[in-house]
Image (cartoon, rainbow, N blue to C red; front, side, top):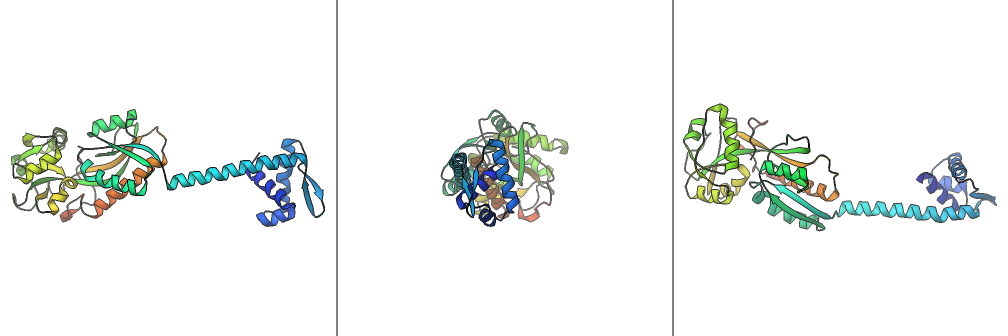
Length: 313
């Protein structure tokens, strides 16, 4: 029993005429007649009898009208609820994010979600790239903002943007210009273990061994120490862009081509999407685009046309 046939049947019953229903529905009269005949054949009853200038419902037809009206109203109501849910999605979403991106993105993200999607409860967990992939796979987070496209078949990741990794120093500590491999090798660094391992792997083929003087995993403390002149650090540009804009820190490109990581959204490949999760994804995507447009993801001196070197942290 097709919904279209029920819809046509209800309109014929309401108007009391196949001719008038055909004109109202903009459907050829023979087509409406075939739909009625199909219903009658399926139910093995007559639904209409001829009347003066139209048709009249039989007892069976009246019963079908009552049921069909309820069905069509339920379908219409369900459609309205789905459309309303799309406009006002709800539910709890757990977002995973790397420590470098958490302070940069989360405050504004929470503010936007409360403003635009007040019925979504957003919880945030931060961890390194490897742990985030585990969290996505085992379902502990619904969506993750990753610092690299995932290589796992169990994760579907979507590239958002490229972010430059830069040498960060106190303002005036070194001349402006590109940091060469030799200079980077000589520079005392304050660096977390996750980023250090990633940078070591990236620079292994270049004969550059990082001079890590202080190993520290708290990025806020790293920025404070660099601002005090206690050393330099390698950080994503977005982590230092605020202090750079205020003149407290300076960011310098590493090598002529620069070093870049990929920002990506990751979800478990086998997990069905939800309206709430998609709302979070749209908001993050818009925020990352804004950051890229504002120059907070790559130095303006030489924004790359494509990624040269990649690093995950």
